[in-house]
Image (tube, rainbow, N blue to C red; front, top):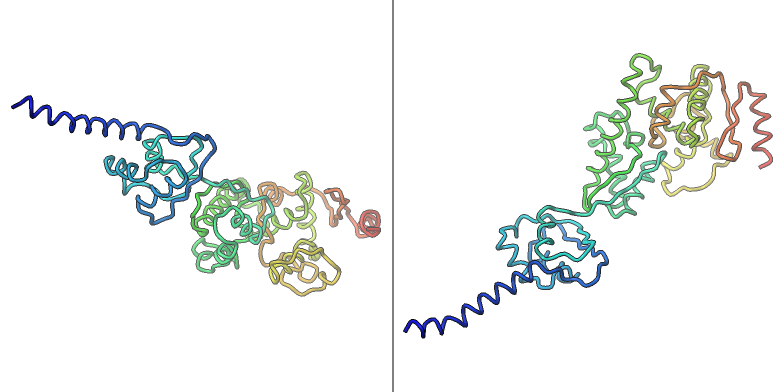
Length: 335
């Protein structure tokens, strides 16, 4: 009787052992024959079945049902993290599941160049697939957000530090701008710490002046000289006559403006036209980097009052208006 029972159970045992072995091999065997990276985007709110289907469609796993079964056996079907995953090489389903549990989502490196405006930053993040430019502009000018950060400003212009950042797809634009603001504070406070009680400007004015310097020159050695020129002119109650402020005032009214500065622009009435207003504009005109911020707090000890472009990225500095006019004749008027 026992022999009969064992004989009848043998096929079932063999089937169970075979199925177990087959399932084990499924769990530990990489699927793809190609080594090309595969990107799978698991949207927020997706259940595990959806994630398994997306992975099957991209051939990251061969069977969505078995992959779901594996997750249930590991009690991890509800612990995976949504997001964008890049599988750089063929992985076994077990290792794929481990990546989902850890949340090894892709991060996008985004570099914000020094001197970028909020308009530029919005476009850069949109191009990186991290939201729309419209969302960033709305947040960068959101009075409630600006107030929550302790700023007395109309926008976050000037307070978003240019650097390389890494963000996951789906990161909220507000969180991204807050991260850039925190980075600005980290850098700015380092500079201020060594200059306490030595700054003739408010902290906001330091940032405004640094933004002008950033837009005037990309040459590090010139930035302290330009800082000296602007500070000298402010002391003498002379208009700053900074061309980039004029362009910024125009762009605030027309964000798509990309034209060249013309004489009629210099006569245009905007709060940022330093050919028309005295002193600094009401806010920064871009987001300055380390060198520009350092230059404001460490200006060159010179009495220059003027400078003009040499058309090679550098500038000619002058003490007097006659000197300056000669430099303009030499470098600009023929152009």
